[in-house]
Image 1 (cartoon, rainbow, N blue to C red):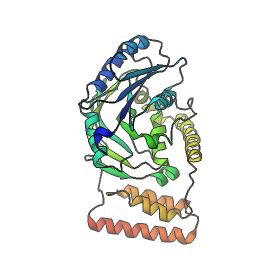
Image 2 (tube, rainbow, N blue to C red):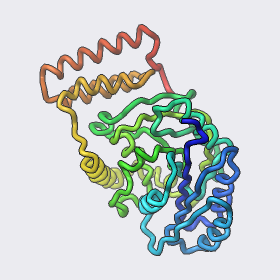
Image 3 (cartoon, one colour):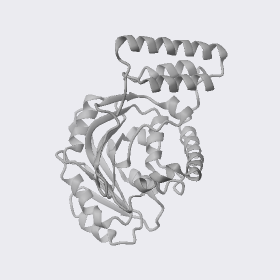
Image 4 (cartoon, helix red, strand yellow):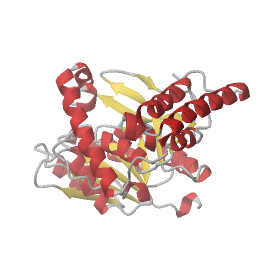
Length: 319
């Protein structure tokens, strides 16, 4: 598919970010390749967001939905997704911005890597804190991650504004009914959900998104909560409910021969790390019910590690 044939939607979720909204929308309008549609969902803001949005919607391809009740980020994702018509969906928090070449770079990436279902990129922090955040130094094919997400809760992605997902994958995830659980950090639903339904994930190493750090930034300011055991305990239960919903919605269960499937999944990562091998070893050891396949799976895994090491494809480290 030529990039010109791919229809794109940008979904912007907003709550009381009127002072940032113009900059965010301008960054979507000023792309070197234009979005087919930009959908702003306002989550019943109490500032002058509605007035700002009405003016912004005078621009071509900008649509908006004003919710009557504040229900949080996941609810806004649900609403925007149901209105979106794009083949690839891009997400943007209303306090962040895109670099002008973001969409063009992403579309070229999707065009080169037709198997890509889900991409996330590096980003730059600005505002109260600055710096470039990169998971890896180069673009990477991260393969499939159904088993390691299902068994170990692996989180392979990044902040909301760096995410893009094919519509066919997103249809298997959204809408999600647990809106109260995910009033914030609803990007968890996208990241975990995409892995569970079989998205092939890729990383774009260029910092193409600007992530604003400020007092009202909910994700950044909640990072301290990672150290809060109560918060992590509650998030664990929310994650379980989310996983159960997505798995049931898509009729997914753990495969019978887990060891074989785990090895096949590992092989979809062109340059795996030692961490990947250890993780799949743990999964086979803990979750494979058949003793013969448990032993055989461990042997096959170590054999594959040796083979990868000898060919030089083992990724030594990430940044």
